[in-house]
Length: 169
Image (cartoon, rainbow, N blue to C red):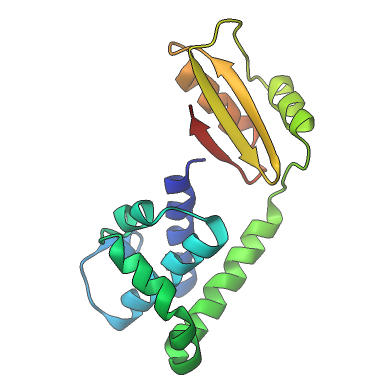
């Protein structure tokens, strides 16, 4: 999954936990509950997933500079605003529960073997490299432009029960 997909998943988790309509975090509404939910999702995305500010801003339909504000004011908001504190606790607990259900790889060779065993194929003369990270493990899949989308689908299918990120090199 890409960083954008991971953050969209976090936003969906946030709206589901708080009982908000789907995709409501990207609306231009300034309701307090939506502002708080955006701030919490943005902060968790930055600190837990290390998602770039521009990606968070794009998904939330906001400027990336607002994400700096979320990071800078988190501590004060958590200490002084009960709505923010309760929202953060709910979402963070749900995030950790969901994150705990998916596994991580600890060894590069084990992940590569798992991918190749589950339908991912490599070519001898690669044109594109797919970097897959899961936990501390990183592996590179060599593929061609023609077969790139098939291999991305195979990687996502093989790692559906794992927490991972994909980067095309």
